[in-house]
Image (cartoon, rainbow over all chains, first blue to last red; front, side):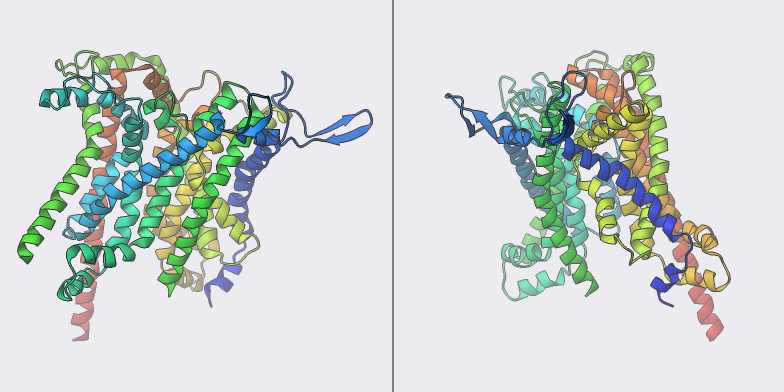
Length: 313
Length: 287
């Protein structure tokens, strides 16, 4: 009896599928539809934070879908008062988010790839302990670890004092609330997400291939670029996406370590919602943010599907 | 020549590993050291004192935030594991039903969805529902729902991977021996995937206990979780009471994880010993 017929015998099947399905529909799909709906409405009039889509006015039904919320993300008035595509604060927030996500991914790859490689080549007996040491900070509060960097990077902080004591610098340099502190914080938090998938791929690699390359006259450098890197492509892509995607929407790190000019997406959505009380625009920003994330997600699923078929083959 | 390059590679590996571990652990050491500082400064260690631990215990916002977070995290962990078990079962065992691809997409979508969007869209739902039927008030309930949405996705990943490794034959054998399906589940499947349920519970507990963003969207007036209180303090400046709280957390977590890994290593070793003993017995019996 194959597994499929076997599972069809189960009487509770409907419930087993139904419970999680209904939960996801109510708390994931419906909220998203509400988000879409609010993103195409007017701002409300005081009592309601947003206007209804369908209204009965003087005996006729009016359906109004307002796309202005979306336009205002990309357009602003120029000197003559004409709307043109320009650098709105929203556009800047999208660009800043992409910029930081990209740099964080590059830094994590640069730090994490050799790290994962050396762990994969370490003695088998100590590998679990080495991996556990990577995971351990991950289990302690993310918020507190980011908060610690605030104390380390401050003008009168540990790092500045240490550098002055070493004699590298005379005056404290500003690191907190700059691009540097943002990148340190984000790289620090997301590095394990890069290391673990890379390790998972590298540990399965047959390192005798490198010996063969050496015997055939390849330098270690060439062997690395021609053999190790192509073989670990899936891990590089998986790790990069696992870093890039959450970085795009990061909220806590920019609020604690970022400067006033480094406004990122999460912050803009938050401000529109709670400071400006402009719910429709917050919703529109969130919808555009999802579109931004769909691209790297498609890349990720494409490659992980490819990897799965390879594994089955 | 080869030995030189090998030596270089080896020491480069050591240096790189140590540097990255240092990077990963510096904040933890910083938190632990400065929680015992006698002054408010966080640049110089002026002397040993436990005043910040006393201050922590007397800070009513932190203490009540801690108990709220604990409650929310326990409920979230439990709900996530229950829903995650269902979802993992569907993903692994039910290969064909209408809407399967939609289902598997929905299960993993919260993993990649930014928390800001999860928080915002759930808030909009809660506002709409509350207007219609006057419930739920924003507070612990809404926070639990938000955390569970995320937690379920993580729990599903953990449990599904264990369920895939499990041998179907045992379940089929139980069926052949006359077990009812729910008996098979509770007597055979569940004990088999139990370690993954524990792991999933701990993971979702931690996620919930640490979450700021979803809680910020879904909490109501007067309801603040521990991370929300900490986040509020952190935006204002240095507060060594937080360092004290962090130190307590780090010590608890590392003790827990070390105990857990020693336990798993022991069980594994015992199982291997048993397997070897069984093989030996088999060989003796044959000869």
